[in-house]
Length: 397
Image (cartoon, helix red, strand yellow):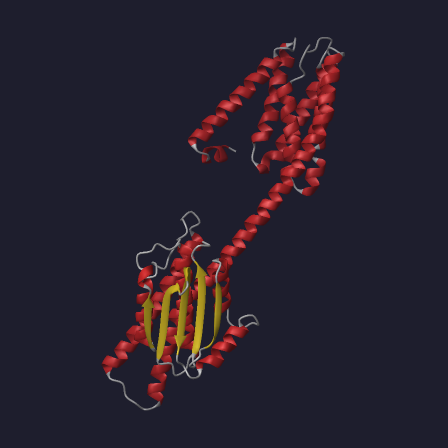
């Protein structure tokens, strides 16, 4: 309990100490109504135990709640046998603390304990008015308030328990969404680099199988490309694992570096495969775009180039066009088209198989685009090859 107290901030610790001191002082003032010093001291101890049971951690709550209610019931039993008793209050601070013990037991305990444990403080609340000496209107008023408050605190505990369950369910849904998002991010970052490694390895094996001897310079350049792609893949995985482990670090809103980072992406792709040409609308150069849009655009281009390398056999050129849609200045158009001869069937197989146990690249890409309020289309191009088109509304973000 001391460890949990020290873990709080200093202003919070000061507030708790002041609040606890004020409540204990009120308990002591109420104890002055008791004519006997021993019973006055017992009243302070009983009230303090009830307040302490509200402040203890969850692992100690049941123990302290039973101890506090036992002390309260014992004091009530002793005072009912005395000839002189308090005239006007049985201990209202203690009464309120017992009522809150009912609520906390219903809210926080396990289902079985939530049914059994509240009976103890409820019994202490019911018999607490017997400490008053006067048997007239004051006692009837306290009994009436007690009879109304006990069911109310039980219902309040049930409502708070339901609220906690809904909040936990919502938190789990958010965590599940984050897990899916991280899975998509991992695919987008790593698959692009791993595909480059596979393509370079296939090229080296094809050259070796054809009997063509490679010069040391060409071999070193090819291995350098493979090494760079592997290092980038490892860096992407390391950054993703770091973001998963460090829950205190703020999430990156735009890890792609904006639309200008696409030039490096197409340049790296051209160095290892078909030539990729990027056409970026000049109107977008100085225009600030939301992080959701820039990330979605980057993922569309990255996933499309990865699929070109994996499926578009014989592709010699890839056109990447990003600009405002003609006639719709508040809608961004992202187009990636290749001229591969054998790429369309394979790409179509992946696009259709993404919902049938195939790949997950287009599934994650479609989800990302739809979450940004846009739509994605992929299919054979008019002149052959494969064409991916994404439309993103800028005014909806």
